[in-house]
Amino acid sequence: MTVPVHSLNNTHRDLLKRHFDELADADVRLRFGSALNRDARSAYVDAIDFDRDAVFGVYADNLTLLGVAHLACFHGAAELGLRVLQPYRANGIGTAL
Image: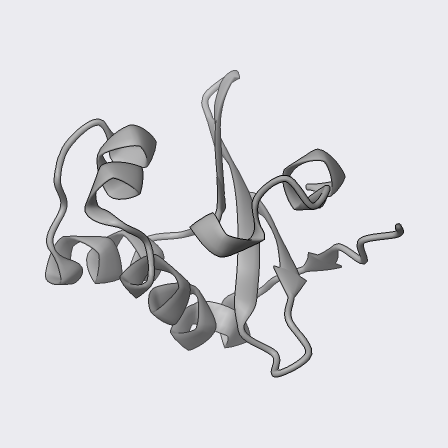
């Protein structure tokens, strides 16, 4: 099965926030290393620099984000964050991202 991956930009911030709001608490801790509340996750999305970083997403038919990859670049280093909503794991989304 082919999983289409789309490049995201500044216009997708609200979709990204909704995606993070749907993550289970355990998934938030795994992604961020701590239990970030909704406001902290929203601030994270607001701080994404789309000119510097690469952000990709996989959409459901209703245009919600099922999975997101964020490659954040910092002065010669990078961090990759990858998350797929629990019900959609093991369907090739993480591999595609």
